[in-house]
Image 1 (tube, chains in turn green, yellow, cyan, orange):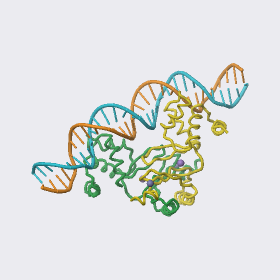
Image 2 (cartoon, rainbow over the protein chains, first blue to last red):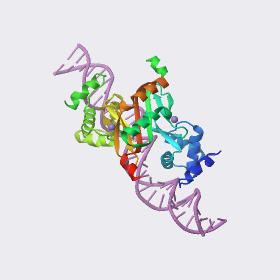
Image 3 (cartoon, helix red, strand yellow):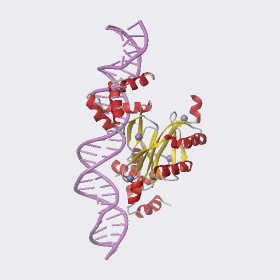
Image 4 (spheres, protein in one colour):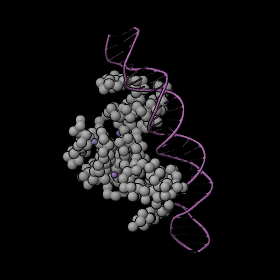
Length: 141
Length: 141
DNA sequence: TCTCTTATTGCAACTTCTTGCAATAGCATG
DNA sequence: CATGCTATTGCAAGAAGTTGCAATAAGAGA
Ligand SMILES: [Mn+2]
Ligand SMILES: [Mn+2]
Ligand SMILES: [Zn+2]
Ligand SMILES: [Zn+2]
């Protein structure tokens, strides 16, 4: 299944359009799989769509995140990176070596429910990044 | 107790210096109490220290955050704001009206411990921002 | 397949944030 | 109180990110 076949219906169902720009950006994120900064997305997507502009990349990433096709994540330096939306997860980053692992949302589910009850808010999403020392770096120090 | 008396020893104990720039920035955050963007910090601190530059504000906020005197927080638009370090807390923001409440770290403590056991990481800190609909905005929609 | 509506883009101007480097100023020490 | 080391700052240049607006093009409907 191509990126177009997979993502276009999701956008159209919400009243939005699939464009060559959105497709190129989704294609890059889909096939890379990992975290990319807006600039990295721009440079890679531009190889398949040279007319693409940085402005559009920023706007599109925010748009796709708002519609659940990609997910933003916060890096250790406080910058946003994006990845294609797969299973819901958060990030745990080593302050020493930068090594990173995923934290399944499942692990936080009961905490989420407690928070909803205590606050009265209905939770929709979150930016969660945990920092610490990975097993390796704990030995070294 | 003045800001200087309170914060200078904390910096010197770590081998750093207290400067007029750091003091002006700490003063602004201390007496404001809330969340301020780097630009807001710059404009307010500049009234008491006109020679202050934006470069120094960015570097100082990062430095103070790294040393535990201020804490960064992520806004709904993905931008960093800073507040003076008081009790450890996280943030819950309404996606509709922007209303914001604090989430005591205590509430997440057991989840933190589970995460340490499961991952093998030793957690040091985190950027946690939760989004949802506040009680008021749930009624309206 | 053509038309029409309007969602989306590119452009230009601007704001925010970062970095290297030389000048400055804390503060420890004598 | 004077000296010296070096942490810290300001400057300048550049990179990253934002915004308003006119031009473009997706795709629904005829
Ligand atoms: Mn991820
Ligand atoms: Mn707060
Ligand atoms: Zn590590
Ligand atoms: Zn609300």
